[in-house]
Length: 136
Ligand code: FES
Image 1 (tube, rainbow, N blue to C red):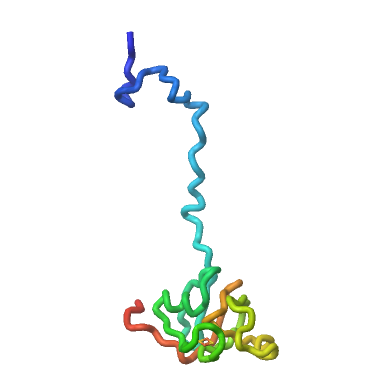
Image 2: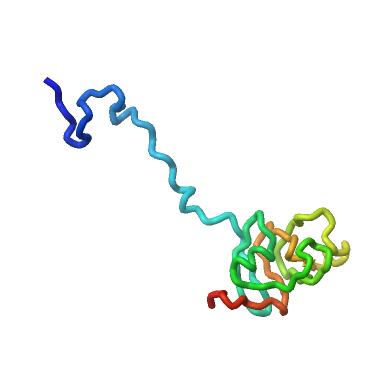
């Protein structure tokens, strides 16, 4: 006599392709799915706007994604139009020689078009504007 499993029509009880409950593989760990994104918070002064900056994008790109326009021209670290002061935090650069002197770097000046956050950041750029499609 052949028994059919009521929960899985078409499968036979004792089917070798269905491992016993104790031997089934563990369910995948879904905790990473709900983990916070790989970002650092950025606060823009004096506007007090905040946005999240990914660890692989420039501060300019992160701001733009958040509906904030920083003044830029070259976007490759040479023209200094985006020149901003970082009050706290740290950055790394996407280019080997961003257009800043060693003294400017020491004093906390950054070029957001080529700077990537490596910590939470507070930066000053009074010329930043919200774009028309920005929320809030
Ligand atoms: S836009 Fe030119 S250095 Fe940033």
